[in-house]
Amino acid sequence: MPGAELSGVRSIQNRASINELKLAAKSAAIKNVVVIGGGYIGMNFAALFKQTGKQVTVIDVNARPFSHNLDSEFTQILAAASVENGLQLKMEERVTAILGSTHVTAVQTNRGQYAADLVLVAVGNRPNTAWLRGTLTLDSEGLIETDDYFQTSVPDIYAIGDATKVRFTPTGTKERITLGSAASHAGRLLAHNLLTDQRIVFPGVQATSALNAAGYYFAATGLNTQLAVRMQQPVLATYIAVPRLVASAPARLNATVHFKLFYDKTHRILGAQIMATAELTAVINTVSLAIQMGATLEQLAYGDFFFQPGLSQPVDVLSTASLQALQTLATN
Image (cartoon, rainbow, N blue to C red; front, side, top):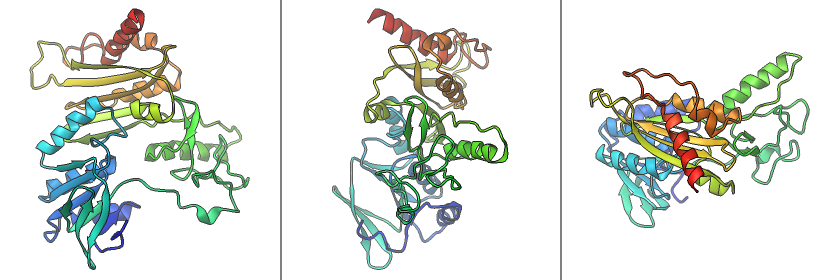
């Protein structure tokens, strides 16, 4: 975009750029920060800059922050909490230019102009693979094509990470999953295959992720509404908001747990999202494994999950959502 070359316009490419931004957050010379992109990276750094006393504006073309990761039941709560925490959210706006002579001074959108001493561009990336054409087989998006062992079209060259696609378990298709955890899983399996005689086919990932923002802990795995539409994958969903603990627990400990479960008409689990002011993100790992193992609503509904009055409800949130989903399916 015009002005992207100005001093003070940053993006995150590696660990060094993250450290540079953390130092910039402490700089007294920087008073106004504009973050372009309301996803995990953008919102995480927006919160960091706000904590250090900056005026922070987040601009995104979507209706709410985190919209690629979470459904509206979650994002509307996070958006309201972010505003309460002092962030300026400019949603459904598109940046048209970054302004300034040598150093950035403002960001122009289709709706307004926002002062900026520093701009963080966090809107995703494209694979920088044009230099590989003629050496490795690339797909129409410029991503490196690999097999189930991450082997490229050249037998002695393997590839993992954001410039490749991996098997996405809920659909069985190969997708670009731009998460460090997905690359880590791939790297460990690739190392195993290179160093042993027993090669293992990569089982796939569920794109499991988690974050703490705006006073909430949240996590997601597998399909969500937006992904299902994009991938043309029919899904059904059940959303619940239930107390974390029994009614007799102190109110300060009894956070509301927001949980959404995705499944198909055969009752196969396809995805989930969880959010609460309490730290319950590890629950999503159970759902991730359920997706990988091809589990059904019935298996989650009647699974052997613990109950302890100070830690949970008599019926676990996974079982509660699954039972509600089964009831809905039975009456429709």
